Image: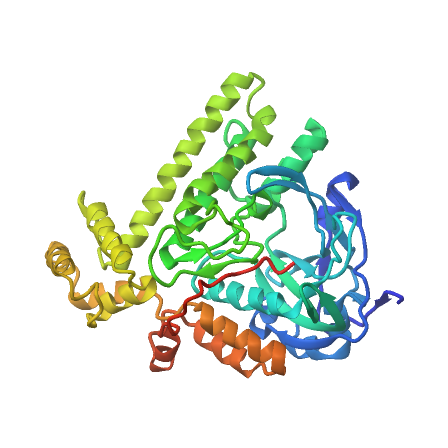
Length: 492
């Protein structure tokens, strides 16, 4: 199929700095593989407007062809990015195995966002895969990434999903689909690992300088600009992972190629939100040893940052021993920043405006009881927010009664009113999260019956997670008990 140029009714405004400013060894010029009969499944009108696109025009045939990879928008210069990464601790050569970067959309405000087609066919980095994606996983990424955005957590976002008119074969034949993903960039820890392993020091500098200019243009550079780069990256990762922990989000596959330098959550595969509080919670079908369990995420973030630091050692200091010492000191700073960010967030979840030395012990005592009594993470904090304690094992226990008295006494030692305290808790404790059973319900209706109304209702509720509306009540209910643990899959 010929790659046609469109009329650009949608308002695409592409630049291609990654392709033009970095060596060709970093990527492969490649058009998406055409598909037979693309049909629009869903489009994100609010995001379209933020990108400077005309939402109505994104629903016409020309835009559907763009989302499917059948037409290249004016100004786009497609490519597949090369990168590497540690997957479950093992280093591999990787790359965009089923994704093509169309280019970078420049918004009316001058902001720059990658526009990537995920599931757009084979690339030189496919490693034997078909380069395609199934509808269910693409809609899943759409739901979860938009929920994360509404929760105030940095994330890639989803502009559209189209079906391809072609099946993809996994265990069974499934409906093929392509997701249009929007990101501050797709530069990963694994991008630096690729250059450090197979590139030159000059190429590493080029990548580091490009990253600094793209993601940290207003940061005052220190004596060593590459030390500044590492500091800014670990700061964003510390805050990001703390935000994950505060809402019970489990990424599921925290490989180094899935850590974005921008500090966004990226690559939603076997992710899910925790119901019962348990630090050992794992949903991913392939994480059999619990490497990426909920409670391990902060430490894995540090491990990934250590791999990033290793790539930058030649730029930190000529003396290897001194460079390593600098990296170790900064990794200690990451741990401290993560902890302080998490602790501050937990204080807010309990309505605490100022710091006291015993706060962490109070928080951990509650979490320990929640684990013991298998209490729901989100709903426990929601119940505390509105002082609506049910007859669950947690709330009826003597331990909790004693803890509750200590918490109430702690609240009396702050100047803010009770109304202020409740408002802080409402703003810090979501009424709803994308419950696993609700997500599956929406996906089943869409994939099996082409009924997107269930998904649209879910997205509407998730768009205001701190609204605490009556409409959200039923979306906060837990699933029926099941003898089978919930499992998620990478969606490849």
